[in-house]
Length: 320
Image (cartoon, rainbow, N blue to C red; front, side, top):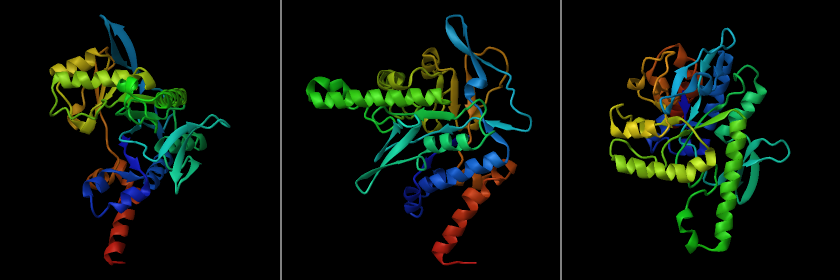
């Protein structure tokens, strides 16, 4: 399953103006509520590396499904986070406990918090709720665009260093250093990174050359921060066929676990060595949970569906 959590005030300020935005994102409070409900219903976060091994065969790395041995009665799931970003905030490593936290600028003042950022919320929830994480697994972060990784400028103007001042070069170098420190800390703490392309490109409209140019930027400005990953998350869910030259390029580049939200992505999962696997993910949001009616989604109704309906009735003056 994957999430797009955002600050509460941003979501609810747009609920009457942007239906698509309102239906496909959830607030931070809703996200916390979802984690609580999943935990109470015996769901357990697992690391995707506990599902697949990397095997080197015939000059390339391939994948092989592993047997997952989790506690009896637990329901395993991989947690993905897409479309997260930072505008007036950034992540830091707290020198006191070496935990990743967020600095948020509010009314001109900086405050350190763990309550308004998806990464720190999950870190805190796992620490406080034993049995919610298998082997301290946290989730997969889909990284797109190098210009603000964790709130740091790690790519903008990097190709124009000869034209910028020494102070700006030092600031850029420091940002790259801090972003890498945070990435290393997160990886050591159970997080995994996935490539979401550099420029959030739409595969419906781009040629092979454009994909190559985009991935060149990814390797130059993003991979140097987060390190190697074999996970590829399709932006906007637009998948490409296995026979497409663009897919072959990505697979040959080292990506062998492809993730999307389209059901047709599912392939027969087996324990044989394969060149790649496809994973279909569910977006946890108002739109999806309101359309599907089964036990899996029903447990989320009191967190996402019912409160929003009540809020809408209240705004329209239809109190019960």
